[in-house]
Amino acid sequence: MPVRLSLALGALLLVAALLSLFCGQAPITLGSFAGLVSGSASLDVLILSEIRLPRLVLGLVLGAGLGGAGAVLQGFLRNPLADPGVIGVSASAGFGAVLALYFGVSGLFALALPLAGVTGAAVGVILLFLIAGSGASATTLILSGVAVNALAGALTALMMNLAPNPWALSEIAYWLMGSLKDASWNEVLFAAPLILAGLLVLLSTVSSLDALSLGEDAARSLGVDLRRLRLAVVAGTALAVGGGVAVAGAIGFVGLVVPHILRPLTGHQPGALVLPSMLGGALLVVLADMAVRLMSGPGVPLYLGVLTALIGAPFFLWLVRASQRISP
Amino acid sequence: MTGLILSGLSFGYGERRLLDGLDLSFSDPGLTAIVGPNGAGKSTCLRLAAGLLQPDTGSVSLNGQALSDLSPRDRARRIGYLPPDGRSAWPMSAGAVVALGRAPWRKPLRQLSDDDRAAINDAMRQTDTLALAERRFDNLSSGEQARVLIARALAGQGEVLILDEPTAALDIRHQLGVMGILSGAAQAGRHVLVAVHALDLAARFADRVIVMQSGQVRADGPPGTALSEDVVRDVFGIRAPGGIRPTPLSAADG
Image 1 (cartoon, each protein chain N blue to C red):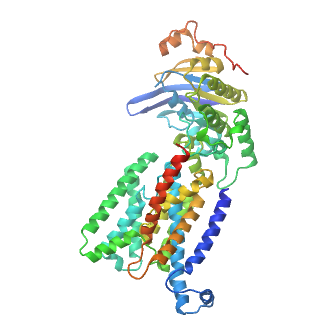
Image 2 (tube, chains in turn brown, blue; image 1 turned 60 degrees about the vertical axis):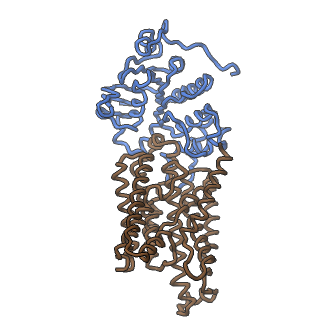
């Protein structure tokens, strides 16, 4: 069944991806695609190849990273409320980027901002391991993640507090909201390899996640090496989510909601949920980014992270209510 | 040396010694019940025997091979372990729970093989759970859940099966059912080690009973000698004239 689900999601994703290329202020026609192949340099072809396509590709990999990391974390922590924010990766990547914005390093060279974001994610993960220790249980890991999250959040607030002028403050604030609007091939080439590597690491945890459903002792008795699994989960999440946050800011709720929607369709098996959640995450981000472009008028654009949170929060509430009705 | 050998096992947390120089050997297949008051070290002993804990000193070997030399996967193929808290974090189907027992045998990202299916089917038949396969695990009764979890452990087809209080939450009828299943598995040629609280169950089903007290083996032998009047009085503080003997019980409708 997960195979059919993945195929269906893949087909939807293809349709959404094609539609999203037509979405935006400048009109794109089928002729623009022909121009893309023949190497024409007209405006619509340039918009397609230098703006729409990198934005689409970045949305796809970033969404896959968020959805996949959410599914793996929920399986690993055996908690349907877990998401990439739980272990502090998003917040520490955000703090790294804010630090770069604050000190103006971000203007020095093109990839300074994402580089700072990824460094922040890596430091956050190292800190997580230092606090939790090498033999940490899932609960210790969550608590340590909460600590890292709070620390990164506090430091981010400090940077905003110390911002020298309103313009610097607004730059930080807008960046934190999360958006794909500045995506270019530079960002894609930087983030995609990181996220794809993270996705591979996350996929390697699939069978261990299933065994973990029955508890840590049962999983170990089934041959799961918990230390290695924990390392794979945290490193995979750091790459898959940190890489995305570093180029596009924090986009919330995707990692939480997507596995939730798809779980009943995979027989509630945590391992079978991972690949569909990657596809579903990509689909949700591409759709949301389309919506953002359609809804944004001239002036300040609507930010992707704002939209996902606006849709995600009430939807999540509804999910919680619905699941209460099914099983008390 | 064939079978499962525990030699000179010591284990503790900090200053507190839970086990001190424990020696046990299980050379012939059979059902061994481990009994003792709470805190006697039964669970620790079983987790060490399953290779889930590393002893401070001493070693556990299976057919002459130290468990610490086996990869987690190889160990899992040979030793099945059922922890005391039998719950599933997700509302999976009972069939999916049993299939987890095949984890040590499965290749990554592959469907179940014919061998896997045969082992799962076998384990579910032995535990009379085939009819429950499509039901949600969390909607089953405690007795049904216990049988499904035992099927999960049996599906691994290890030569050693270690169960920590599989009968804890069950009524007497289901206790008899579960012990009957384990007895069958032992007769099929496995080493079955089971911790139980009900001395009556141990006396009725076990080929061998090990009585533990404060991290030491207090008595070890056939139920008749291990659960003698003296041992039961010293270890449990209970008077049992003539020792513990099984009351003649059987299912009224079977």
